Length: 169
Image (tube, rainbow, N blue to C red):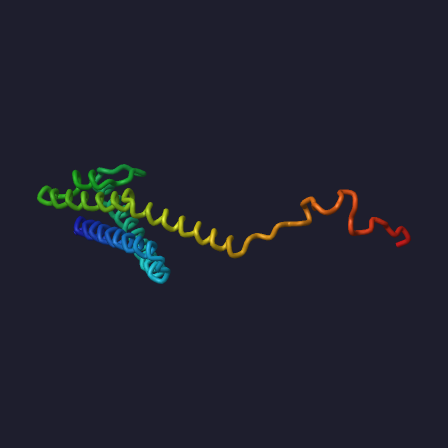
């Protein structure tokens, strides 16, 4: 049944987003410990999960839109919501289960979006990059351009080059 397919998609979305959250927590520790290999590994693990979540979300939206438009509860151009899905399509006997699914998905998405882990990871990476730049600048300072500054030993009018122009050429 199509309602069960949508349920399976939502359960997969919840699992994928929970996995992203777990990876974000491990990434924080890898950043704190400056463990670049672990960080690279985690980023590589994250990418397929993100792609899968995007595909699942597109499939969920498409399936829900088709079912709800066929049932006449969703107009063209309107986006389906889980609340409206639960109210109009889900059988009465399954409404509580769907509400639980809806709350689980909303909670996982809220935690991913608002939890300080992602902001902490960004701040830690920014600080690490600033430290690396500072260290590199200390080890290899930028050379000063002597061509465009006034020299203290010479007068402004004198030059080491001859100003004579050979007009015969």
